[in-house]
Image (cartoon, helix red, strand yellow):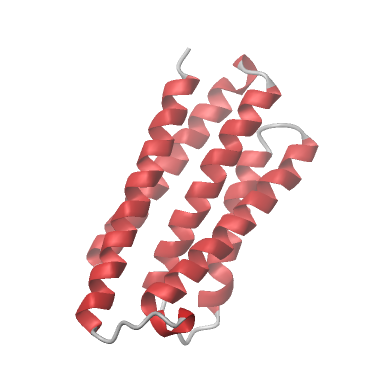
Length: 153
């Protein structure tokens, strides 16, 4: 679980740094470019952070159902508010969808029987969980680096 916590902090730091870059340089780009970049980072960030939260919060708590979606909505709202009013709704939608996808992926990683995946071994479940979380972290890093590259002026 320490690896998942480290990946959560790493991806959260990337989201915060990209948000600061957008806030600083948002007047340099047109709304179409900014909207595309915000949609990309909102979706992947919501998936990643909600997946990590779903894996770190115990299953029996009620917050494990709502917290990942609320985190996704918050990320979408913050990135959507950089642009104009209609994009805020678009950001909230992308954040909520990313939050739900991450929550569902985390639930399936913890209990593969939800999707009739025949995995019986606890060690194989843990291995799949760590492989997919590292893959999501790398995917988030790649998308973040593409966004950083496209923002450079």
